Length: 287
Ligand SMILES: NC(=O)C1=CN([C@@H]2O[C@H](COP(=O)(O)OP(=O)(O)OC[C@H]3O[C@@H](n4cnc5c(N)ncnc54)[C@H](O)[C@@H]3O)[C@@H](O)[C@H]2O)[C@@H](O)CC1
Ligand SMILES: Nc1ncnc2c1ncn2[C@@H]1O[C@H](COP(=O)(O)OP(=O)(O)O)[C@@H](O)[C@H]1O
Ligand SMILES: [Mg+2]
Image (tube, rainbow, N blue to C red; front, side, top):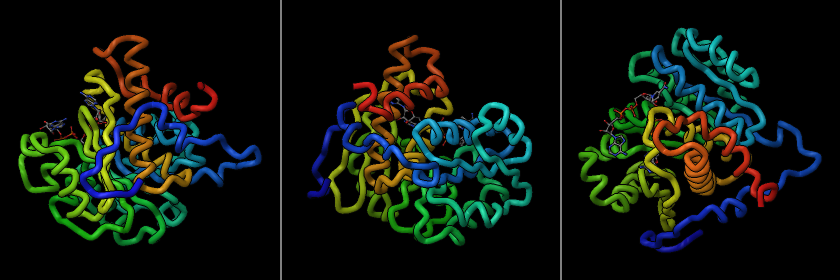
């Protein structure tokens, strides 16, 4: 999609098929991308687990996790498909950084020395062609100390994080969400997903996309971590950054609606979306 910045495209579930094509019959895991998820400081291990599992459920070929030593056994018990490495000194193993097609940094990362060191390492040492998805505390660290980002980085702020990135109040973001989106895209030269009811996705010089799917059952801790993993998993499979962000936000919102349809909005859990992410990520199979 191209056009004037004020253009707004509404996305619906049918649009998923634009981006989620059937796989080549002879494809192998190396064709579907490698995601490295960095985060999960002490007390927030679930965030990075949810993100990693979502990346797998959206079809990423390989998923690595660099997290606090405390979380490795729980992560492997829940998802043995994930390759988890403990980071105790704030240094991500160089081989993990070098092999990643996409790095998702931030869920549960914290803003202490451990998380700040890894965030700086990602910005300093990631390969120039590695796509970055920055969420949660990576956004808070960026707001505290703005830095230039690699081209086509994806930022996924909720209104509170967006406010910190812009140096304004969350209420101001909510009063003019389209304006806040434009301001974020311009200030950080990035693809931006402004979350919340009516999620907006934008990139500098392009019209915005709006997603009206999703429901208030999704207002629960961990739901954004699933979104970040979803976008990273789609990006790893070769979608360009703006499309991975839009497709990921749409897929996540539709999965939230499908899961709420099964059991109701109240009490919906982020992990309830996982089977739906898989089903909706294969639109030809479910058509
Ligand atoms: N299971 C886990 O381990 C979880 C860990 N989490 C991690 O916890 C850390 C803190 O994240 P939080 O997002 O809770 O902290 P924040 O302080 O960034 O967000 C909470 C505040 O942001 C504002 N806000 C959020 N959504 C808003 C909306 N839709 N409209 C208006 N204002 C809004 C509100 O002021 C709210 O009190 C992050 O590292 C995060 O990744 C969370 O993701 C929750 C789950
Ligand atoms: N009322 C709502 N309607 C639609 N989507 C919502 C609603 N409330 C929350 N969400 C979605 O849930 C996710 C919450 O993300 P976030 O606040 O980062 O959660 P967490 O950090 O706890 O994982 C976002 O994708 C947001 O769009
Ligand atoms: Mg979040």
